[in-house]
Image 1 (cartoon, rainbow, N blue to C red):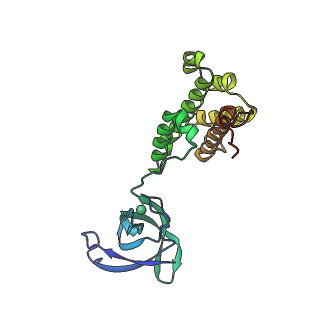
Image 2: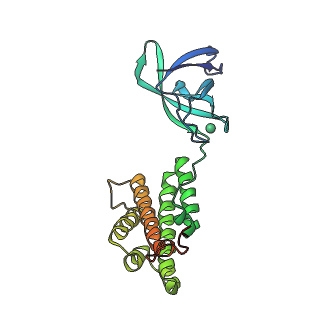
Image 3: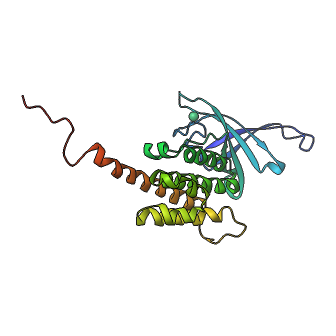
Length: 244
Ligand SMILES: [Zn+2]
């Protein structure tokens, strides 16, 4: 286990605390929360805070030369663990968090920029630990994706699609068994994120995100297949190879 030195601050409540102490950390952060590159961070210093020294902030700097941002790792004291006479702390969170932009197939980004934006904002909320508002955000992102795709396939019914419930749009307008299965399940879990009572008790935000990712994947594959007759017609290349 790595150990770091933390500076004890003299306060009215603890007038004898001034000086340095060494504590044991269960791990060092291995990813910068800003650039999301795997790093071995540069340790700067640490400081305890909170009543009875239950939390320690440890300050690091990213070693990625394109980033070099400072960040703080929050460690919580593990009272059940000990390493000799050292107090042990467990990594809980790194801040600030800059959520990575979601990566989806270009066909999905072109189809629904709103899906990408809402998904990115929901990821940001999740990154800040705001999972209660991230869930409805992901549900909203799914609705943009499904409806934009349904409208692409059925442009003459755009107004009706916009006004319909998400489940109805999936049932009436999305082709293919697999896409229908994953998108409908994503909608079920998404609805759980917005309702007072949860139906799918064993499922969580990560399950919802997996199903949204699968929905985006199937849509990307369908767009690829739909474009093939134009990109690669059965009659062969538009410009035949000239024989010398
Ligand atoms: Zn970084």
